[in-house]
Length: 335
Length: 288
Image 1: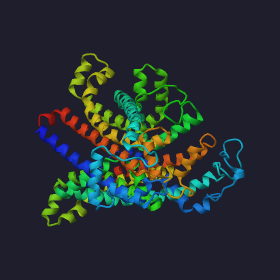
Image 2: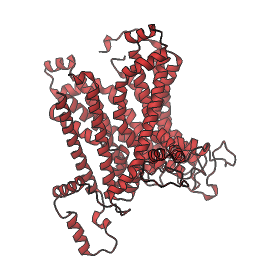
Image 3: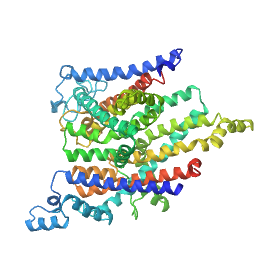
Image 4: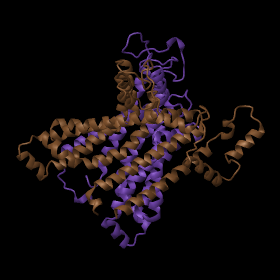
């Protein structure tokens, strides 16, 4: 039963991936501009054009072209960036760590802020504190990351300039990175100045991405905590002499967390999607910023590579969330 | 279903809901009036450049010039006038894009939720595929493919956000379809499509309206984002997004160019989402 549902889930994932490939291929082919002409330097001969056309299969029928293209993609051949003249897979992989570090940092902030607000609201349920937190989370929730980012730029970049509003790290820092995971590598090599500089650059974009999710976590987790806090076993803990805060942290949190974890899993992909514009806003050198440059410069191979990478990332995250939910939920596990 | 609710619904609750409706309504009403009357309300031509008056600060700072209440940008254009004209584009995009998205997405959601089977399988798979794209990147890409311009922006929003309606309305339709009133309508001889439109649709309408309001707010933001990356309508035309892009570039010299359109966006997005919640509670037969 469990195995069958996992297999069915894997099958639909494969169908989704294939659909994504079809959509990306169609969009790239519909895009105005002759891709061959863009790949060649100006003044290329007719012969060169014919040769490249044949090489990329542009003289074949569309379904045939799709098969050739998909074959290349499956073998990791994403082509060469037109503007940057480097293999797309290298470019994309060099930017991925920046986006991943930003997304994970935003996720941690969202969990900390949202979890804290939920515990506070549940602890002081029925009081003005809870009403205030509800109002705040409702307002925070309806404002998207883009606006939070702009507000932070204005407040902490200009009016009270305490943080840098562009880049990923202080350009004056001397440090030879072997990987692109600045925070992780800085930590492992004991260079706290590098870590501090990267984190301070990440703080505002990460907060912008985190706030809407934090509000969602605060609302859902508080609701679930309140439901758990009227159950008998929490009353028993109170009878044993544990304080209300201890009851929430010791007993209630563990039992109320599952719906929140599912929500966070699903929302994490939305958060990663938000990095595209937030990175642009903070001139943060990640995938999203590169993607917008690629679209503006009509660098089709690069756009295609980035979109496919994002899509694969989202699909894998959703799959993992689904599978872990199946494994964590006792009703489904023994069903 | 409305008859089942108790007549002694708490009055305080109704009062609070009204405030929740009226505050956002008054902001959006103001926007509509200002947008319609823009040529008469705006103190200056939104496109007129005046290099003698560049980067004038707003009225509450020193060094301001009378008549330029919210200051001027790097080309000496009046910020207030540009915001007033920008409200036109913001509202135009928000209403038209949200309506198209809503009709398209809700129809698919209703069909998938009620007919099930292949309808559901195909539509749900399409939703899955669509959700695998980062929405902002998808929007930027679509506009790049279709060419910049107002119609492209509206089409891009509809092509991306229909999934929000389809997902929610599909789930709600599935719940409604299992209810007794649907069976009794069918036994009474109603056809399937007539049942869907006549019986189920009115019951999912509160959710559709709430989502529609939410979508209007989202559409304003998407337009601003596309203007911000210079992919909406021509960059000379006054939109809140293009003002924000300018403000971001000139942030160290003229931060007010960013501040005022940002406040307008905040208020608009908050108003639409509050309005959606308020309307949903007001028209929900179960909550009433």
